[in-house]
Length: 274
Image (cartoon, rainbow, N blue to C red; front, top):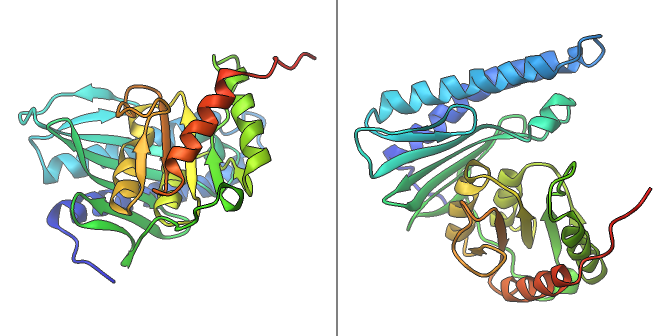
């Protein structure tokens, strides 16, 4: 089943595709820089900023009154205070930095505090995930639906691992251990936006993570909802954008996953000592 893209979705997809051309070019250069003495970190930072400037210019040209919330440039108000773009120009920067071909651009539109449209574009796989409230979720021209698996033992989950000294790592490790013991597997691919898109596509049955920012999840939330899935924070609430936790899954597994994660995180494993 296919759907005609609205003018709004066309604007978002066109902006993502234009910015992605520079990212693909820069990604090829990063692969060469891996062997240099200086390394690719500075180059990747500029690639991120270039992509963000392209996205802002394209979206602003099409909808000049809308505001922005962007990973690099932060928040800026528009003449229309009811609408703003939420943009991540390069989700999975660490993958990009290391030459791992799994990253994306994420764009969402928030209207009167509600997420109404989302685009996640994977330039290397040429997959554009898009969704609009009431229209459904698609990858390119194919309709998406979340998986129909009902058993936790058959479920494949995705997550993101807290790095460095970020708080909550012990609780996360407890949840990860429980998930590994009770499901068919857990994947950590390094892109929350693509993880959510994969839940919408039925590739993953569920996804959870903590410590995220609005631009990491905004577009993916729309995708999962429009594909028939449930999205909440880990407490079962609706504060996924600013509460720094998210749980997305198909309707049959969401409540079961929420209980499993809550129980596991209430009894964290001891910290690993070297």
